Image 1 (cartoon, rainbow, N blue to C red):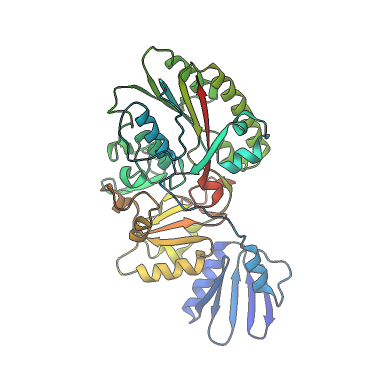
Image 2: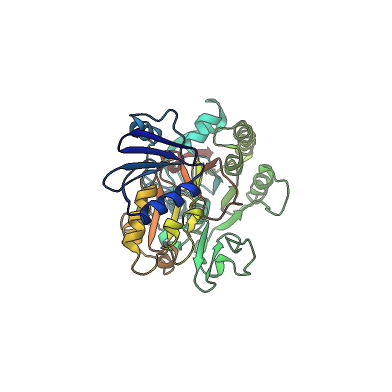
Length: 439
């Protein structure tokens, strides 16, 4: 314990070194008959009817009579942007299908296509949210100058869900690609969906997610040549020109071409250094300049759509792996994504789990039952097709980030992120759409 300050005769403020120490103290108080009266920010307040004790691992300068107000002010107000599947990249995928005479249930209300085009390219720049673009690039930069409109990210606002939605033309409810890792019951373990490795041990399982949740490209039923162009992740050093050059080469054919081109930055650099870091600004300037040259080199009769899978926001970790108060109610470890986390709860423990979650994290995460999260449309149309694995993948409860925190549920050696995504803040959910028309 760092400090133990008596605020009034009946109010005590206790500050701990970290959340693990605070969780242990809270557990001790609960065993001694105290009850959680309320929570302010990340600070539970316990009472035995005679005194109140504020437990905190968030540092407060000079705790005094206004201690509760001080803590409350630390919980910053963040603008939220809930999913809206009438205005996502799926609507642009639908517009591409209609360009070639194929049907789609998605309507492009932005009228992206001013006429029919021979070639259509989607270039997805990972993590390029509106805030990232506007704050890291000059106003007159190519990407900023050519923004046509803004749209909602697929939810969860994370790469595995959004890139899969773009390639497949399916919502996460339809494809079951809902996050970074998920529980595969046949293997009885969490696997990283992109790689098939065990999320918690990093050991290969030899079973890629595509074996369990396969999908086809949205152009697979079309009589149009289609390409998926990804970088070579086996290379130690990669350059965006690798995928852009490949794209240009594959557009040099007489027949109509559809392309999905993916680049993993600025996402990676922001995870490492921060949303608005010098490193993020530098890499985004490099991307901007190279994409501009690429756009100028595109053949005529090509429509280029540049967008992002999600945005980014500065974050701080909550080490939930240390929280036995909550983990004791779980039958498997948490999964999915750090800001859209799913829980499988032991039979008969749902009410206790919910009460404890709200007491600890209710100010910074919204907790929903799986049924309610689906019904509210977070993952797609609840009245449409729902993939059979959704029931397993979403567990019993879904916690969605509404503030600047992410859950580290892997362990103490897990990488610490300075910037992240998968929540429903505006920074994560609002992405630009840049349309370049080559006549």
